[in-house]
Length: 185
Ligand SMILES: [Mg+2]
Image (cartoon, rainbow, N blue to C red; front, top):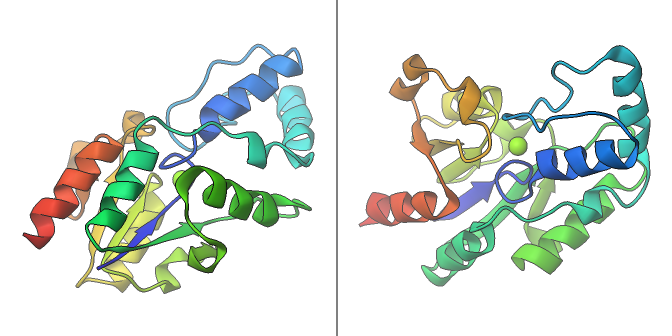
């Protein structure tokens, strides 16, 4: 099967990296659950952080989410074709290059298996994994035959019970690996 994995919040801990960056800039910041790292931030701090994220090196330095590499290796050893489908930071001068390098270094995902896009629903596959509900819903609507999975290992705080009807939820990278194994059994 072709497996499409998001990067931030699924493989890379963007929130943790963002928190560290905020501390470096002397900003009092508590790591958010979910993908919106700017949530609740004061306007002036937000402006500073937007500039800080724009500096080359941030994307490349993001920490790996524990278990993510084992999940990717497990999927590949089961014979799946693993792609990363990742939305880039708009107007960032080096984001896509840094992300491509990170995916190769930390996940062993080569650059021919990386799709940089915000239009994730255009990418075809058998399983789609993302931590942003809007992406999961859009992909699920566009690919009703596919299996869309909301990764909740970083973003469970904004998960609602009503959302459980139309896609699967995985609570950890290894839970996802097990779910995929059951799915194809
Ligand atoms: Mg994400």
